[in-house]
Each structure stands twice: as C-alpha cells, then as structure tokens.
Length: 103
Image 1 (cartoon, rainbow, N blue to C red):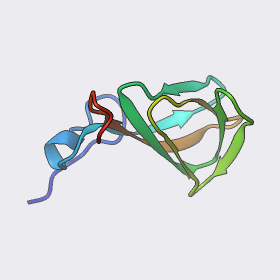
Image 2 (cartoon, one colour; image 1 turned 90 degrees about the horizontal axis):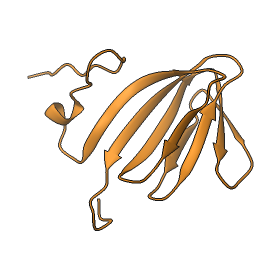
Image 3 (cartoon, rainbow, N blue to C red; image 1 turned 60 degrees about the vertical axis):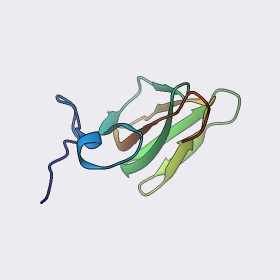
Image 4 (cartoon, one colour; image 1 turned 90 degrees about the vertical axis):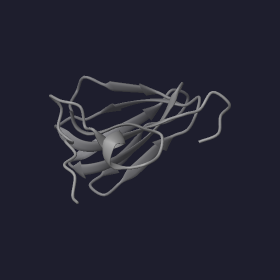
C-alpha cells in the first residue's frame, strides 16, 4: 500500500510513519541570500541540490559551490551555512542521532 510523504513545508513530512529508521524530517527548502544554518548536534543532515546553485560554507573552511545533483552531509558536531545568490531548491534530510553516537 503506497503512503504519501509531504516534502514541502506547511505540514509535517510524516516520513517516520512511512520508513523505518531514525528519521527526523525530510523536506524541500528554497534557499536564498538569507543563510540556512545547520548544526549537527542531535541530528545528522544530508542535502541534495534539486535546482540552482547553493553555496555551502563550513564553519571552519572555504565555501563550496554545489550545483544541481550535488550533495553534502553533516556528521555529528559539524556546522554549515547554506545560501544562494539566486534561489535554489534543496532536498534536506534529517536523521536523529542516538545519545551514544550510534545510528
């Protein structure tokens, strides 16, 4: 039986009702000049550029340009900012981390 998962904001994605795993959220974000800050404290992030060009700026490194089809991951303890000169769309996945550090 198929299930519907909402990837656009406005209501919860319900991914945890559809797939097993430590899902926190999955969604499509539109990124612009206002940076989206992501810090991996109790979640890990994965992002995939759907359209446009995103700039990924690690807290302690040089910015990285990601184009359509590009991806990134933020492991425990990592932090980045995502921004774009022109709006870009990003599929963003959040996976919950256990207290002990195991996934």
